[in-house]
Amino acid sequence: MPHTETILPHEITLLIEQKKFPEVEDQWIRLMESDPADLPVFFAIAAAVKKKGNPVGAVGWLRLLADDRVRRGDPDGRLRVLDEIARMAPTDDAIRGELDAALKQRFAGHAALAAVLAKHPIVGSTDPASAASRVERWLRFRPGDIYHLPGRGPGRIVEMNPALDVLRVEIGGARLPLSLVSAERTLEPVPEGHFLRDKLERLD
Image 1 (tube, one colour):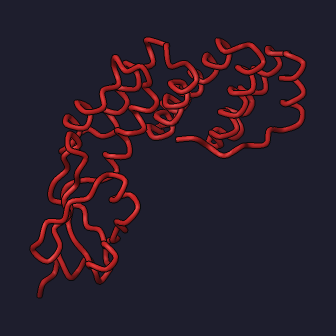
Image 2 (cartoon, rainbow, N blue to C red):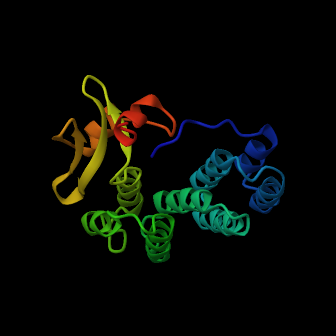
């Protein structure tokens, strides 16, 4: 998904403008050591460096960042970095396999994983970042999860069919079909302990 503009530190902006890429790399490594969680800053640096004519360097630094996320035990962060590499270098053959494997690892055990990947395959896609985004959007939902649908009340996801672009939510015995976009716009997750969840799980 597109990100909002991030303002870079002045010294890094100046180095990029002057195309002092080795010095930018030094700053990148320092940032990884001091504030590794601020991924939008890294993405903004990489985009600016690519724009200044060094896409290979930008992608290489992002790969360092992805490896750092693994070392820090942050699979979600690594997935975000791989998404960014796919956006920046969509013709990179390696990123498709890496992104596919990362998604399978991140969502292992999800009942709809195989169906979603069949509908939106990463390997072989001409736009792996877009395909990965679609996969992640689908897999945020899970069969059995409880949501509130405004105007209808609490219900449970009972079916996910990406081939037909439909999720079905059971509310009061009726199964209501929603497209992915409609589900994202209308379904509100019901947390543990909420009285709406109790209405479904604790009938007594």
